[in-house]
Image (cartoon, rainbow, N blue to C red; front, side):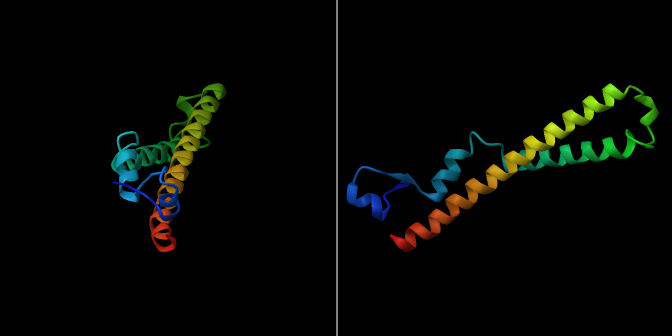
Length: 109
């Protein structure tokens, strides 16, 4: 749903998406909520299993004797965690911003 805000209604040339329309427009490009949550859970379980079983005195630590291989896997998991965190923070910012605009634009305008 496209609507004019009070500040843009005067100029007559600027339009914006409403809160609901923004969510619908973003949905095709973003992961569905269950997939986003699923990817976060998978990364969390992988990191936990890695540090629990494959490093230090873990049950399967001896199966990967190469220090370089362990370091590579640790770095890859760290990169995956950073990517998931950035995506989660971005999603929270976008949702919070559009929610605040939906509430405050209607009260101010």
